[in-house]
Length: 130
Image 1 (cartoon, rainbow, N blue to C red):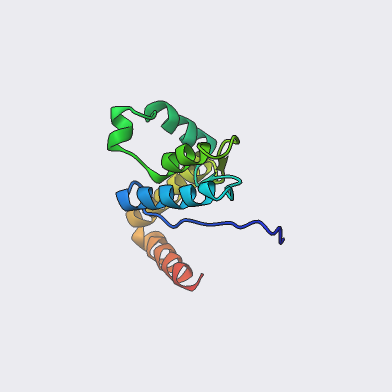
Image 2 (spheres, rainbow, N blue to C red):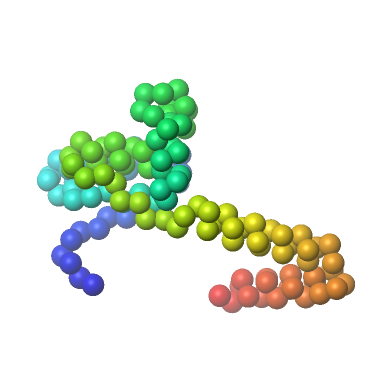
């Protein structure tokens, strides 16, 4: 749907100092022009809330593990009153899918002649064609 609202997606490498400064500069640019309406973060509630507890502004952990997510939120709050918008799947869903895939791979590896090699081959073919 077209809304007439500019959306700027910032490509980053997580926890990278260049990405952090680029994120801050872009958000400052929109904020200083009065064009910042919201800040969206690629995180779910659980991960975001945990980061706020473990890495509060000014803490040693935050200094060591500074990141573009918290920087975006901190800079955005200088210009707008609304909190960040979180838009990522729940980490529990992601963890469940990864665990399921890992266990399937272990079973296939431990039983190569009982269908494991076929399953691995099918996964590789599906991964290259999807």
